[in-house]
Length: 407
Image 1 (spheres, rainbow, N blue to C red):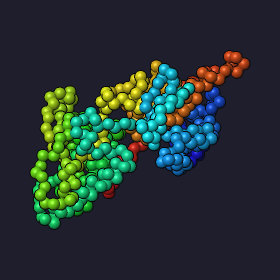
Image 2 (image 1 turned 180 degrees about the vertical axis):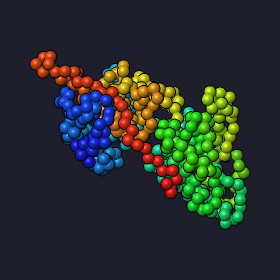
Image 3 (image 1 turned 90 degrees about the vertical axis):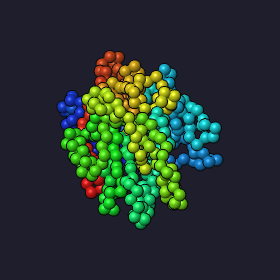
Image 4 (image 1 turned 135 degrees about the horizontal axis):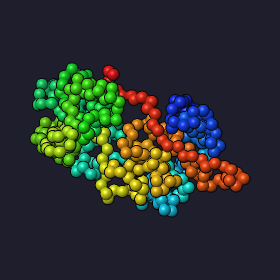
């Protein structure tokens, strides 16, 4: 799809909402403003095209490496890994992928920069997490989860055939946001409801005071009710301190399924605040996990400031780039950050697609305004008004959650 097809559709969703300015359609700096000040990017981006997986198919194969660059109209797509951002010299330092010996290092100059790399996950700050925890963010991780669930299914089947109780298996989900709640409820359906037995206990661990903290009150309460009805063990104000190896007895059954399952079993060491309001009075305890799934974020350790973190751009404790309401960095106004990698206000927006999509529209306008004000001379010397940057105001278009497979 081209942006000229997408932009009007997205604009129609925002009709009558936005920045709270310019109630009628108006012109500003060559672009139309939709009602309440939202930019109409249809004409500005008419020549741009969205690069999809088809672009990846257009790479030329040479000696096992892929060409790093594809040019379509006014868009140049460069496939590579960002190694750092040099804001002083206005350069993005990157290495191309597929090259031997670490890749070729290049620097790309910019007049304006938009960082939209999404959320980052690194489990290195939690001892043992990288070895035992399975993040739940990418397609490959979903396939790995499917494989591990198959091991659990096969093992439970073997236990039932042997009529061996052996206690319940434990599945631990870390993170009580949208993904964590949905995952926990669907795991209950997958592992318990489908068999009519309760062979598995699902535990949801969340370091915040309540699950679904960024959801609406109705959805939060609905999710909490469904979790309790499904028998999910909910632990709030609880943090993971360390992941330890499984201490159970070694198997002598010769079962390939059990042998494979034992490799992913672990002990989760937790720290819980006894005072939910002050987060004081921590107590530590451990729970076993046949399967440990990770949907929460984790702050990378200081020695892993790679990629966009390898810069002097201001960040919060979670590594998100701090921006102004106009989505640019105050100290470097030609650098913008949107989506999960950014934080434009004190209380972060929920890490959802609709936030990033709306920010993209506002950031596009503000990049245009920034470059116009800097490089395009005013007509007749002085009569062109300065193009105003728009502050971002999120318009909640609703939430979607699946609270179990029958929801």
